[in-house]
Length: 316
Image 1: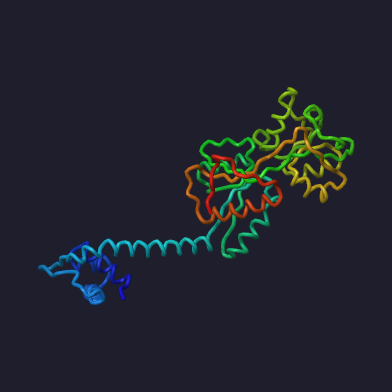
Image 2: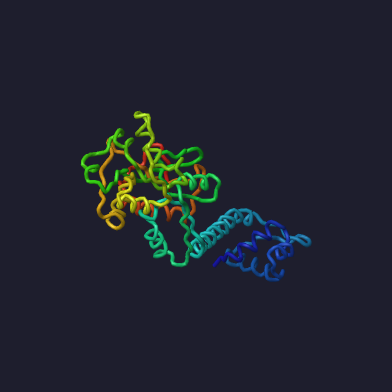
């Protein structure tokens, strides 16, 4: 039976035309290489080299064998690399970017999904704001992410929408929830809004600015806070109203503002969640895993959307 070891010695000898130089390259004793060549010749029933002076010359049979031996060793290298990649994946660090309130849609559940499959990995979910994470993608600090992309600049990025989430108006005043909130009513509202550090690029605020464009006004924020939980609590206390993703409202209102409720905007407004990576990226197994699991988590809460024609395709 032909072995990988025999083929390795054969190719080294073929390349160098010398058993001694082949042994030096491989780090073997010269008699060991000679024995491997003799064993290979015996297995195949042919002569592969003729001795000429201090070297050897390949026969025509050796010429025919060479490309096949190279393919076999290349396949072995590929198999070893695949195993190394999996072993590294299973014991390495997985980094994945997420939009700011991802904890309400995936968060610990997504990490649990990963660890249930690969208990040896280390997981990092990165991101406070979608625009910030997108910049990390462009600079190569992250491989892939799930982001809110309603107003995200696509330059250099492949964007594949996977779900959309309605933005809703929340209030502790039942009278303000009696009918959908129009742009005019929204322009007169006193709001508490989260993401104050990212107010210029926050996707919810940008959507509201576009909605109010015809009124000539911007949303009136009475209170600015960083996290959405604080905003919802203040709504429950009656200090202001807010606009949040519907998934956040349905999860946070019962716990933080049980007397408050929500109503749609008119016309309805949406945030879009999408898989995002660099346009030229060849995604690793770790990135593909996170995309699969994050998409599943997001679509379980938000409304799934089919990929648009011409959008990026993320393979399994």
